[in-house]
Image (cartoon, rainbow, N blue to C red):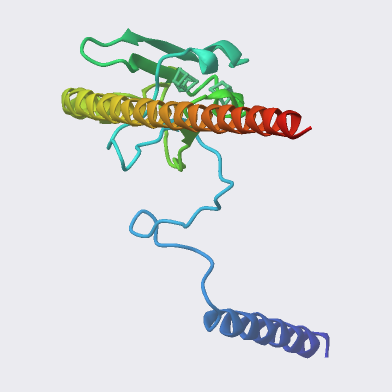
Length: 209
Ligand code: SF4
Ligand code: SF4
């Protein structure tokens, strides 16, 4: 009898297990066929920082102010850069970070005056040692020369527009000044005429008396 009960118990447990498997078989899978399929990450996902590529310039906007390097509590950012010949804008010539030290605190992103830093969506980086230096300028290097040429043109255009605006404002101010002077002269003339008429009227009244 005990043998029959054990067989029945085993069969019941087998069918319960199979029913769960069958139910899960028709549910939407929560796993992905990685690396052929990539997950869609939350906008709040934080990974190593990266430089943003802006559409207008097709490059980053790091002016090597070092604000991010100075504020980094992990001392993992290393930047060099400065003035570039031919353009007013300063540029970074070296921007590396040791991701192994980064705590993803976000302070560097918060202080960047040109808003050119953001978190990347890296999630499958792996290595065999703790040396995790990343060159953030690497993807921009090939384009840098073209950027400088285009930046020079942008700056020249902006300077010409500024000059034209200043000239227009000066011309407008000159016109206003002239109109003001004319108005004042007209008023003075009118006032003089009125005064003269008053005097003549007064003399006439005295003569009659
Ligand atoms: S996220 Fe924080 S720790 Fe990482 S590089 Fe920026 S400031 Fe440094
Ligand atoms: S704060 Fe921004 S502009 Fe300044 S060095 Fe860092 S990334 Fe470049």
